[in-house]
Length: 486
Image 1 (cartoon, rainbow, N blue to C red):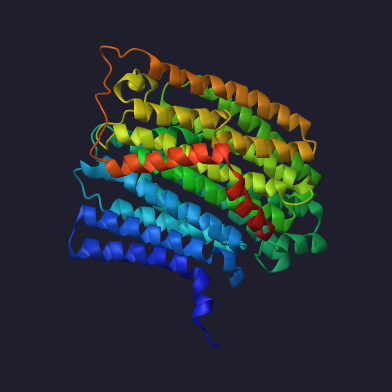
Image 2: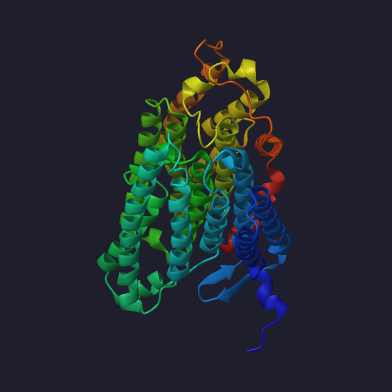
């Protein structure tokens, strides 16, 4: 078999990200330099994103039995690489005063990104497991990275162990479901589920789908598999929480979408019913429990549970819909969620460090009077998460709502409206606290203004938030074109 450059071209983004990790490792081995390691990581991720964007219109190839590089996977490769680059920039000042060796954090971040890119580029259970475990193993280290910091050691270790044990359990469920399919069909492609229905009973197939779906639901922190989420979010360093909440969720949801679309899992009425129940519980549990929190990371954790529930409505609608409107809704909402979460956690990172995290609602009292610009950015992200018009979050919810209306999922849409109303309260509570006068015991002393690159990233995210909320047509044209490849 003669391999040409065109055979390797679809894999170039993945090759570049992997090479970035190797270069960063070599740089650490030759001369340990924090700035050099961060620079190599950021530039490598930027190059991978650019290459993926350039080849996106021309690529649609099954490069191996485990991976398909099409326009949809390349779109999310761009999203993942850009998001990882932004998180690396946010991490720079956060980790700067860490006493221990901090360069290795960027190795873990790069390896996690490799796993995420593999996940969005697979239509095979083996590729899914390889990508997922590469991502998960890196996240264990990223979550526990501040374990030697006096103030956060206990919480970081607890969060990492919780995520490790429960994540391994969820992976076990998925592997058992895959084994059931492989035992009857002899293949692990997502499409093997269609073959399985021809040779085994529906009960057997539903059992396999249920086990796989349970593992995926854990990774997405969908209720009732969400218990780990607030504790892990709160105990992790903010950059690690950001990665878990954005790239980790986006990559896993793309896997879920490909799985249900290719395998026909939603052709079982019982699976649709269970997915609907999970969506309802996730929306209500996430929003109601967020009302009781005063820690921003826990609020955003419960909020993420609700947002995954909203997205699941669009996934359910994809079975009943004619055309790709539901897939477009999922894609746009995932992009919007990544932008909103990056911005919200980015503001927390600006004010925090590995030695002192400011993550309570009371810490940001009077922020409008201390730093109007950052308060405006934070407010924009929160209002977008709530789905207020003229923000990208509103457009995302509109497309999910549209998908539900077209497929007449009235009960689920009613829950979406109620959940959004509840969510508006706890988001506005944070905004109200920022508008209050500065109290005498307020510990927010000012912005870490030396991290100008992080402030620039926040500016980019804020512009995207408003631009896509006011004029989403260009990005929707791209999403419409790529959605046919799912």
